[in-house]
Length: 169
Image (tube, rainbow, N blue to C red):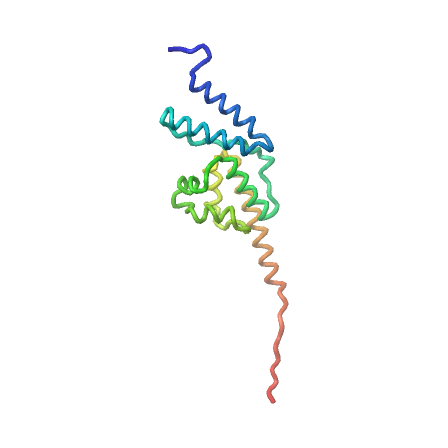
């Protein structure tokens, strides 16, 4: 049977996508995530399917992909995660052994720059960033990593030292 407005499932998908996009504007992200979870429940109950997001709920513009410090980089990872609509256990499950559950939590909770590039790349890929944006996040990571290494080596060279002279009586 043909429908004048197109396939009903495609139409429903477009409507939900528009709703989620409209709700994802600043200040309404929690509502967007709630609506996304609602549509997942409906699709699971009514059609027996469990959609997995191919892209983040809220598109991340390349201009947003910036970080000058480790703290800003971790905040960027948190933003990417929230926009994905995935729970941390879901991210870990999809990553397999590349990114164990403890590492997923560690990426977002600690205040230091992640040390393993493959884990950062797996994380942002699973969260739905397109390849050019994954590459941009990895460029940021490399730049910050180099800055951290330079700062550490400079600090070690500049450490004051003391000579202890012991006199015997």
